[in-house]
Each structure stands twice: as C-alpha cells, then as structure tokens.
Length: 424
Image (cartoon, rainbow, N blue to C red):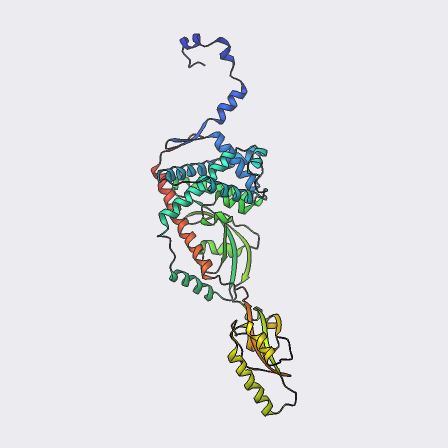
C-alpha cells in the first residue's frame, strides 16, 4: 500500500483498502506468471494443474513435497509444449476435433478410466480438463509437424533393416533383455544439475512404488515414451556400453541408478531376460489331409509298386486341399481325408520328415505307411514365433528412433531461439 500515491488513496473508497481477502490472495497467486515463452504466458495455475495430472497418472504420492519436487521439470515440459504449439501454429498445423477425441481416448486408456469419462475423471480429481487438452493438442501437433518436416529424412533403407536382422542372427544363443527407459536430455550445460536432480527424484519415486511406464510417458524425451518407455528386446551390442553394462547387471523388475550419456540422464528398467533363439520348426502347427491307398502287411513288391504308381498319379493331379475329397472318393479310399491339426513334432517320424518342409497346397510324394500308401497335403501352416523380429516390425522402430533424434534437435533449436523467462 505504501506504493499508492496520496491522490489515488483519496479516490479509492476507504472500505476498498480492507477488501483484499484471503480468497483474493489465492486467486492472485494462481494467476501469477510462472514463465513467459515468447508472447505466451504460463501461469502458476497451469503449473499446479499439470503437476496434479502427472502425479495422478504416475501414481506418485499426492503431497505438497511431491508437487514442489516436480515443479521445475513440469515447468520445463510446459515451456516445451508452448514452443511446440507456437511452431505448429506458425506452420499452419491443424489439430482437428477428431484428433482431440482420439487423444482423449488414449489418455483414458493410460489413466485406466472408463471410455467416455474424460471430463468426469478430471472434475472428480480437481484438475482442469484444459491442462490435459493442452498436453494432447501439443503432442498431436508436434507429431504432425515432425512427421511432415522429417518424413523423407527418416526413411529406413533395406540395408539398415538387413543390418538389424544380421545383428540378431549373430547373437543367437546369447542373452537378450526386455527393457524400458526414461531419457532426460541435457541440451544446455547450465541445466546439468537440475536434470540430474530430477533423475534422482524420479528414481526415488519409482522405488517408492511410482509407475515406471506412466512416469516415462510424462517425462521421457525418448521416442519410446509413447509406449511407456518400452524399447523392446535388446541384444548385446545394440546399446552403448555405458547403458548395456548396467542393464545386464539388473535383475528382472529392477531399475538402474541414473546413467549419464552424451544425450543426458537415462533410467533403465529390466523387465525380462531370455536366450535369443530361432523358431523351432517342430512347433509349427499344420492342418493335414491325405488320400490313402491300403496295402496288406504281406503285400508283394509288384502290388506295392502298383499302389505307389497310382499314388504318384494322384499327387500329380492335386492342385489344392479341396481336390483331395473328390480324388479320395474317386479311388474309393477307405480312410477319411481329414487327418486333423497337429504340431509337426507330434507326428510319427515317417510323416514328420515329410510334413516338416511341405508347403501348403503342395502334395507330398507317396509315403509308405505300415498299412498302405498316403499322399499328404498341408492345408494350413502356422509357423511358431521367432525371437528375431519380422522386417515389417523393424522398420517402424528404426523410423521412430530417427524421428525422435530429429525432434529433440528441432526442439533444442527452438529453445535457443526463443525468449523464455521463468519467474518461479
């Protein structure tokens, strides 16, 4: 009040000098500016709402201490979102209502709440829905922007996929590790202490029961953040040694201490380990049909040769499994045509050797069985899963890694060029 002029004091009604209530003070506090990003402001209310969302989503203790510890990094995330939104607006990136509806549905899934209860959930927890919508809008706009800007640069060549497949094949028989990560980048040396402290705080919260995957979704700058930090199965040599060594020393379910690399600080979680192996062909499932020609146990060579000749003629005439029913009826085969569905390893050795390499729709050579001659056809084959990923699964993973690196550089450049002022 000492800063008001005498003239202004005379103009103000006397009662107004005492009308500044605690509620007014609270309102003024939450509207206080937390940061300025170019020509946009982030208020303390924005910061409190986002912190509440992060605490709820990550299953962290909802205490004032937790909020205070997270405020610096939450503010950094809000600043980055503003930069993303501003750049998207500059380049005319549009986030449609349908985009937002999809984003809301995904957030409901991550929060484990019933579909369609978006508004109800936030109202019940005292969190503004706008803070979640801003996060969704920024994420979608940034994803569209990064894909538009770097789509050609991030293309994955066949040679790059070959290299990954070769690496898997070289590591056959060696241990593999299913891992998740949180990456907290250090783009500016001045941020070193702040990021290191955040990494330690997040580790402490995870050790207290915080959800690793949810925390990764909120804080990690890696492309894997959208999958809760899941980076899939890691083979020896796929990670830098400063990450691979501590990862391999973990037990399943354990989390590493923060690890400093050129990018920043990493927190790793080992989900599971296994020995890398190829698919076992004996585990393939096959549906079989056959045409059976009977032979007596004491049949002579001439009779056997005659039946084999007929079987060869039958095999040459078969085009698909549908043909078997008609042919079996024509030759008056005494046995049913449907053999059933089996794992290859369950078949008798004489049939297993034939079926193991027989492709669907192709007849086998005549197979001598104890009671006759059989022409077998695989109608359906389901190959067992292999530890080596399919090429179509490798491509999007490599592309996401490239886009993630390019996006981090892009955001770093936007930060350097922007006017940013933190006020708390």
